[in-house]
Length: 199
Image (cartoon, rainbow, N blue to C red; front, side, top):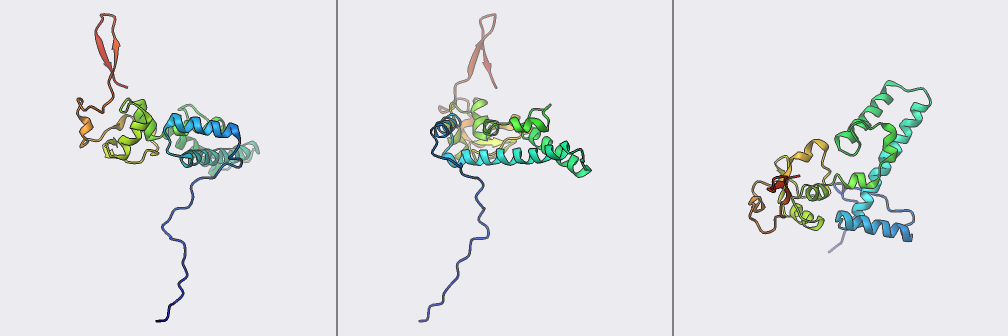
């Protein structure tokens, strides 16, 4: 039997790497900073952090280029549209403040992006008692955004979607007596009555 040589090519449907690795990954300060962020935001590994850092660098690079064009005094209509689209996009995503401007993009940090992750929003809304539990709820299909189940912890929640983050309607955790649900925080009023505080 004659064997034919087959040239293997890259799989066309495979996505390219979506992040850049640090230039000096073994610096002590960088290692400590990364470890703190991974622990605080419940990230699975450094790759998730590197993706956020790469996204931040991309926006900063684009902002610097647009600022240079604006500083030259020769701003075309297309450049104005690019500036408006960039700023509006970051505002819709909740990364930039409502009154933010192009210059404010350079002041953004990686934490501004990590705070928009679904895993972080679920914990902030007290739907989970910790980042670890939040990740577990999302991966197991207990969390929905605007009624649609999302199983990706790194899903970026837009500003308008934040109020729609809740338990998936078919999840057993919707039952208030479910044992894994976090306890509601209670606030005592002036009359001494306890009131549930729902974030």
